[in-house]
Image 1 (cartoon, rainbow, N blue to C red):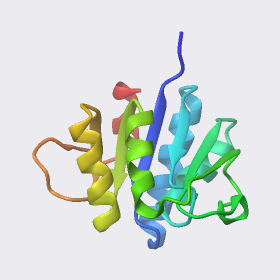
Image 2 (tube, one colour):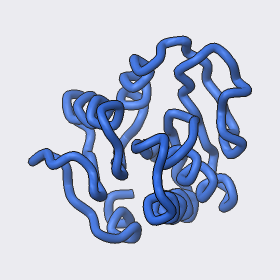
Image 3 (cartoon, rainbow, N blue to C red):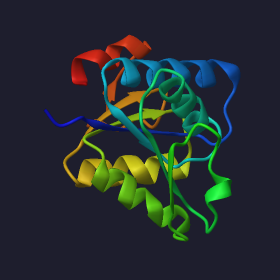
Length: 145
Protein backbone atom coordinates (compact mmCIF):
# COMPACT_ATOMS: atom_id res chain seq x y z
CA UNK A 1 0.00 0.00 0.00
CA UNK A 2 1.33 3.43 -0.99
CA UNK A 3 2.05 5.82 1.87
CA UNK A 4 -0.04 8.97 1.85
CA UNK A 5 1.83 12.23 1.48
CA UNK A 6 0.33 14.84 3.76
CA UNK A 7 1.07 18.55 3.31
CA UNK A 8 1.06 20.77 6.37
CA UNK A 9 0.82 24.40 5.42
CA UNK A 10 0.67 27.51 7.55
CA UNK A 11 2.34 30.55 8.98
CA UNK A 12 6.10 30.93 9.17
CA UNK A 13 5.66 32.83 12.42
CA UNK A 14 3.24 31.38 14.96
CA UNK A 15 2.54 31.51 18.66
CA UNK A 16 2.90 28.55 21.01
CA UNK A 17 -0.72 27.43 20.52
CA UNK A 18 -0.37 27.00 16.75
CA UNK A 19 3.13 25.54 17.12
CA UNK A 20 1.86 22.90 19.55
CA UNK A 21 -1.17 22.14 17.35
CA UNK A 22 1.07 21.66 14.30
CA UNK A 23 3.49 19.51 16.30
CA UNK A 24 0.64 17.18 17.28
CA UNK A 25 -0.54 17.03 13.65
CA UNK A 26 2.99 15.95 12.69
CA UNK A 27 2.93 13.26 15.38
CA UNK A 28 -0.35 11.90 14.06
CA UNK A 29 0.98 11.89 10.49
CA UNK A 30 3.92 9.76 11.69
CA UNK A 31 1.71 7.46 13.75
CA UNK A 32 -0.36 6.76 10.62
CA UNK A 33 2.82 5.95 8.62
CA UNK A 34 2.32 8.90 6.28
CA UNK A 35 4.98 11.14 4.75
CA UNK A 36 4.97 14.83 5.65
CA UNK A 37 5.64 17.50 3.04
CA UNK A 38 5.86 21.20 3.81
CA UNK A 39 7.69 24.38 2.86
CA UNK A 40 10.61 23.34 5.07
CA UNK A 41 11.04 26.57 6.98
CA UNK A 42 9.85 27.84 10.39
CA UNK A 43 6.57 28.19 12.27
CA UNK A 44 3.87 25.66 11.37
CA UNK A 45 6.26 23.97 8.93
CA UNK A 46 8.93 23.41 11.57
CA UNK A 47 6.47 22.31 14.25
CA UNK A 48 4.75 19.72 12.05
CA UNK A 49 8.08 18.47 10.71
CA UNK A 50 9.43 18.18 14.26
CA UNK A 51 6.40 16.16 15.39
CA UNK A 52 6.65 13.85 12.39
CA UNK A 53 10.46 13.56 12.49
CA UNK A 54 10.61 12.78 16.21
CA UNK A 55 8.08 9.99 15.65
CA UNK A 56 9.86 8.37 12.71
CA UNK A 57 8.16 9.81 9.63
CA UNK A 58 9.83 10.88 6.42
CA UNK A 59 9.78 14.68 6.21
CA UNK A 60 10.19 16.54 2.93
CA UNK A 61 10.80 20.27 2.69
CA UNK A 62 10.15 22.06 -0.60
CA UNK A 63 12.40 25.04 -0.03
CA UNK A 64 11.84 28.46 -1.61
CA UNK A 65 15.51 29.38 -1.87
CA UNK A 66 18.78 28.04 -3.18
CA UNK A 67 20.34 26.37 -0.13
CA UNK A 68 19.62 23.05 1.61
CA UNK A 69 20.89 24.61 4.83
CA UNK A 70 17.79 26.85 4.89
CA UNK A 71 15.64 23.86 5.87
CA UNK A 72 14.61 23.49 9.49
CA UNK A 73 16.49 20.70 11.33
CA UNK A 74 13.53 18.28 11.13
CA UNK A 75 13.51 17.99 7.34
CA UNK A 76 14.99 14.66 6.22
CA UNK A 77 14.72 15.43 2.50
CA UNK A 78 15.30 19.08 1.57
CA UNK A 79 14.39 19.95 -2.02
CA UNK A 80 15.89 23.22 -3.20
CA UNK A 81 13.75 25.03 -5.77
CA UNK A 82 14.82 28.67 -6.04
CA UNK A 83 11.14 29.30 -6.82
CA UNK A 84 10.12 31.43 -3.81
CA UNK A 85 6.37 31.06 -3.20
CA UNK A 86 5.87 29.36 -6.58
CA UNK A 87 7.08 26.24 -4.73
CA UNK A 88 3.57 26.08 -3.28
CA UNK A 89 2.37 24.49 -6.51
CA UNK A 90 4.88 21.65 -6.05
CA UNK A 91 3.64 20.98 -2.52
CA UNK A 92 0.02 21.02 -3.70
CA UNK A 93 0.68 18.70 -6.67
CA UNK A 94 2.68 16.25 -4.56
CA UNK A 95 0.39 15.88 -1.56
CA UNK A 96 -2.59 13.57 -1.25
CA UNK A 97 -4.22 15.78 1.38
CA UNK A 98 -3.38 19.14 2.95
CA UNK A 99 -3.80 20.50 6.44
CA UNK A 100 -3.78 24.29 6.75
CA UNK A 101 -3.01 25.78 10.15
CA UNK A 102 -3.29 29.55 10.62
CA UNK A 103 -1.35 31.36 7.89
CA UNK A 104 -1.48 34.40 5.69
CA UNK A 105 -1.31 34.87 1.91
CA UNK A 106 1.22 32.10 1.25
CA UNK A 107 -1.07 29.65 3.02
CA UNK A 108 -4.03 31.02 1.08
CA UNK A 109 -2.15 30.40 -2.18
CA UNK A 110 -1.34 26.83 -1.14
CA UNK A 111 -4.97 26.20 -0.21
CA UNK A 112 -6.06 27.54 -3.61
CA UNK A 113 -3.57 25.31 -5.45
CA UNK A 114 -4.68 22.26 -3.47
CA UNK A 115 -8.36 22.90 -4.14
CA UNK A 116 -7.67 23.63 -7.82
CA UNK A 117 -5.83 20.30 -8.06
CA UNK A 118 -8.74 18.44 -6.43
CA UNK A 119 -7.04 17.78 -3.09
CA UNK A 120 -8.88 17.58 0.23
CA UNK A 121 -7.94 20.47 2.52
CA UNK A 122 -8.52 20.46 6.25
CA UNK A 123 -8.19 23.76 8.08
CA UNK A 124 -7.56 24.92 11.62
CA UNK A 125 -8.17 28.62 12.26
CA UNK A 126 -7.14 29.47 8.73
CA UNK A 127 -8.82 31.18 5.78
CA UNK A 128 -12.60 30.80 5.66
CA UNK A 129 -13.20 29.02 2.35
CA UNK A 130 -16.27 26.82 1.80
CA UNK A 131 -14.29 23.88 0.41
CA UNK A 132 -11.89 23.75 3.37
CA UNK A 133 -13.06 21.22 5.96
CA UNK A 134 -12.75 22.83 9.40
CA UNK A 135 -11.08 20.90 12.21
CA UNK A 136 -11.02 21.72 15.91
CA UNK A 137 -8.48 19.24 17.28
CA UNK A 138 -5.41 17.60 15.74
CA UNK A 139 -7.10 14.20 16.11
CA UNK A 140 -9.78 15.33 13.66
CA UNK A 141 -7.32 14.58 10.83
CA UNK A 142 -7.16 10.84 11.60
CA UNK A 143 -10.19 9.80 9.56
CA UNK A 144 -8.66 11.46 6.47
CA UNK A 145 -5.26 9.78 6.69
